Length: 212
Image 1 (cartoon, rainbow, N blue to C red):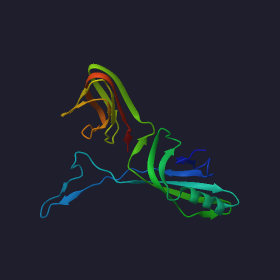
Image 2 (cartoon, rainbow, N blue to C red):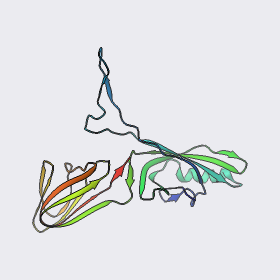
Image 3 (cartoon, rainbow, N blue to C red):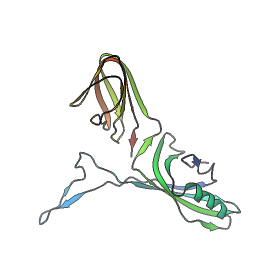
Image 4 (cartoon, rainbow, N blue to C red):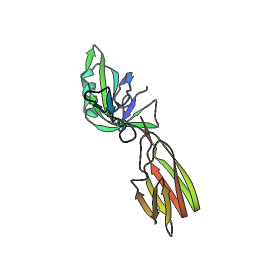
């Protein structure tokens, strides 16, 4: 039976909830406009930083529960889920997850059939379950292409070398020895990101991709 996994609990396998109606929403854009006093229109600052920002999003799921003890079953659901914040994964999309807080609605009961809704107040992003790991053995100069989703991200850079590695990304340059580094200027945008690496050794980029 299809459903969703919240943390370690599956809505059907763990709690006997039958998914009746999923409602996935798009994250609202943080739109910012300044009115032009005495003039036409407005100044749109929504993309002031070069790209729009997004608000949290609410996804809602309606479930049926069946049985002779609907109140008891509802209490188990409420105690297990209400108020927790965790990963939320849909059976229809097992390779991605949302991160959000769960709110359980009041129980609507009719004989041996009950209806319960779950609202998930989530971050805007649909994250990949597995991190993206790009590793390359370098001997000389190599151009490494890092593919990324819509959410900008700074990867963890891991270097194994006996000397130093020279890294170029855009206008930024680093000379790094062995170790692990977070380089704020090495922020990956959507699509292909070309990083030039010169040296001898192993370099690995680890990051989690996300889309809306």
